[in-house]
Length: 434
Length: 98
Image 1 (cartoon, rainbow over the protein chains, first blue to last red):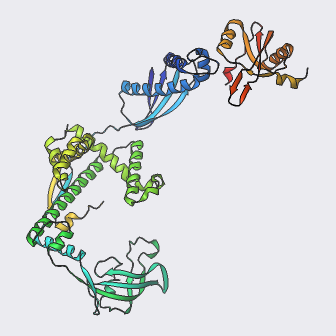
Image 2 (cartoon, rainbow over the protein chains, first blue to last red; image 1 turned 60 degrees about the vertical axis):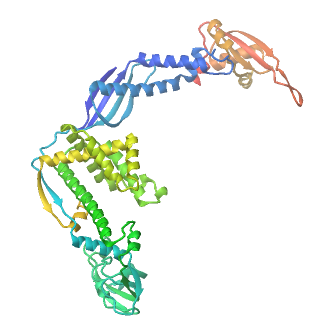
Image 3 (cartoon, rainbow over the protein chains, first blue to last red; image 1 turned 45 degrees about the horizontal axis):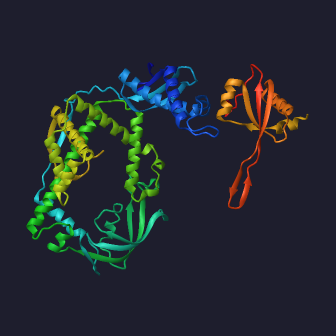
């Protein structure tokens, strides 16, 4: 077997592999003999079909099969021999495919980039930390109560926090525009779900009132034709309702799935939930920051085959997120939608792998254990979940992957300049700006 | 003898163990031929259609088997076969084209 490798572009390699004719001939003959023993053909007793006849009849397809196998084998051998690590499958082209002559084919594929990790010590990372203060807790409990609020219609003027049912139609320069009309819509004042100015204009309205509200669309509005335009809305208020916050009692606690019996334990439970959420959010943000910096200082070229398969994954995930999308074909979504994200993911993946390799990081058993325990703690029966993870190699490997990633982040953090910043709880749980 | 008749004489090759053996040993090929085909007709047809030289033709009639069924006796059709001996240097390859 002869192999020659050509570098066609930075990551693309073209391998020309020549396989001697005998190797193929031998295999073909062996198979022909095998088929001759088993084949049935009219005019011949079973197993008595002459080789010549079998070859004439099945030769071509047998040769095809053999060549397919030879390609796989010899490609594998060639890759080992040349010590190349292909990323993704090769594209095979036949060059010489004639009976009795040496078989030649080219395999075009991409390789993983060689990564020389840039010095991470020059990087500054802002590590956010926060704590749940009493006010935050109060606020959270307030929001929870508002979610469960009862509404009752009132005759008085609408004020902040009230819910209005209204019909409205919007006009720009005296003309109605598309999507500017709604009927019997529920709107909570102060929820900021409408464009700025709209809700303010309704404060003080009564049920049955007809009001004109002046509001302008923000500069970065999603509809191109409405950006920055001033609009007049003719609003008819149908009803005004005020919220009644529910009592903080067991009934309410049960609605949130908490087994608290009094306010104190409820507070403790809510606080621990908040703390967990905050911890996760901060961790995600930190990780994101570390990776972003990592990508920024290491400009590498990524194999497009990996990016393509990542795009495929993202597409499937997107379809799942749309929900009920059994009839959405993932390939219908435009590729460009995911390209950048996929590229980033692949880059991060490659770089993190390199970091793990460079620092010889191995998954720490204890950390794996504690991660599993943490994940299990949100389930009803943690013990069972833990046992399940440990009995399932695939799941355990996933966890190990997570832990490895965390450890890589740790080791990167250890080498970078870390500045601690304290932020408020609300900022802490906000997702990082991309 | 007209050309049209020649195309109707040969019905197809007869492929069997015996046929493959004599093809190698005696340069003979076996055809199923029309019931009323004569040796000279067969010779001419083979020579023209396969572009070979024929030295001898033997023919035989194989009677169809009688088959008994619930509805009474049935008879399979008879077959006339021709063993065509090719002159030295000629060859017919039925299978190659398939």
